[in-house]
Image 1: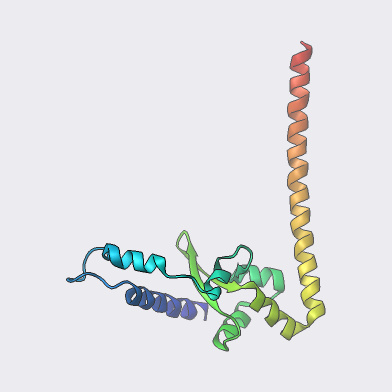
Image 2: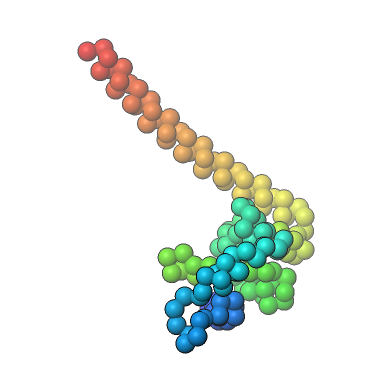
Length: 155
């Protein structure tokens, strides 16, 4: 099911690219300087700025782990028009990027406000515990370095 969504999204993206950048006569080469500058000068709307803001989007995998959603549930919500998505890929591995506010609204509607708050608290606790573990490891390494320096100083 996800493969179908990804295939359709790639086709849509390719069509948008072709429509946005018209090739010079002959259909080869890069767009002209005027075409490139006109594409760059277009102001971004409020909708695009949300996709670019840090923390405003999350991957489908993150939505599954943070909010307890299933992949089928995400795909159904996309098809129903409840979730917007953009197709991304990292090192050739495609994934769906979703708007965090829409995912939260979906979870709140499906499971209630209490469930959403509980999931957010669990996620925050996991992040804090991970950071504490990293800091403890860093402190141990610094203490070891300090003891080596003190020993070298005493010689």
